[in-house]
Length: 228
Length: 228
DNA sequence: CGGCTCCTTGAGGTTAATCAATCCTGGTGG
DNA sequence: CCACCAGGATTGATTAACCTCAAGGAGCCG
Image (cartoon, rainbow over all chains, first blue to last red; front, top):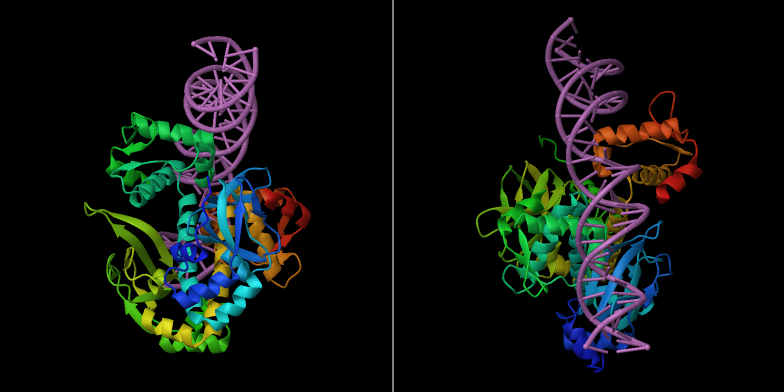
């Protein structure tokens, strides 16, 4: 539930993209940020829409995805708090993907016109943006590589990455529904279910007793699986 | 074997990241690029090292990886010619992964300090780079989307894209060997061969009499194929 | 000619999508 | 409190795609 409304400056400071900036620059950005609050399952933009803005997600979860011809959807990216998305809107006339909220969200909208002017005025901001885009680039590179691997390897990589970013030792909590995770891995729920089952039978992972999380029992074999 | 030494400008122009830039901007970048030639199995940097530079790989192959606790290594990314890596060094204090050459390599090193200074001095360059990265981002987005399609659709898209960028009307010249093309499409030569054959049998494409190029006979059906 | 590389062709096996049925599980109303 | 329902998750059977392995061509150069 989203009830409180933190100050814009706090949200900006908490954003990966803006945190290195000084107070005056933050203020300049705050001046052009347009706060929004959305309910879950709200479409932000569709692939092909004229790209008039990019977004900072302050709170909630957003899914960036492609709608395929047959109605399947392929998730490009899960955005969570403090991350920006659709930055490419700054230079493209058209959104290359669609985006919708998965949960109630609090976010900020940045009009491309206004931002461009600001970038030329404040080069430090442009440099920060470059860094953020480099990060995204690396992420997508990894994604492309992953899609060439068999499903078990993709799942293994996902679990290992999750384990690194979660503090718990060799124990992960899946942050999404199985359906969403399947889309994220470029597969279907049935295959994901079977693959998880195979990992469990193989003694590589195990459900915790409360069925809330997954224990990575044999990290070594999981790593080998992730290689191919 | 690395024998020749092409001009820096050619290497920069051939780089995915820099190719959209203008000549003067390329020159500014060339001025701060530090060329290097390395033998195979040379360590470029280790995870945790202070991030002092990022790199453009002109020729050869580089592996970006994480060293795991037990001495094993998990490859994050294989870098090949024309790609930059460790761009995140621009705004992170520390390398998040290690990197070493897999083959003899020719590459360019960019000191983060120097680059940052240059970008701050020339905001237009920073904005141009942002544009180039946005372009790359869109490209990778498309790549991810494509990999979820069946091989014939990927091939169809490739042919259509090629036709658009080549002047000839509904006739394309494959710019690479079949082997390379197969890799580019995320498949193997055998499947590519069979798929091309099927398109020919279906009357969708045809080899020119000199076997040098492909004629796109039925562009309409090719487009439908590309959808899924 | 032999040896080489690249491409093609063929047979067989594996992976993963599809279609359909069943099983949970949490929520709802009787 | 319980029967029932709806959605997600699982399981099973089938099918299609595509990779692998192996065996030919076809051009090319010594």
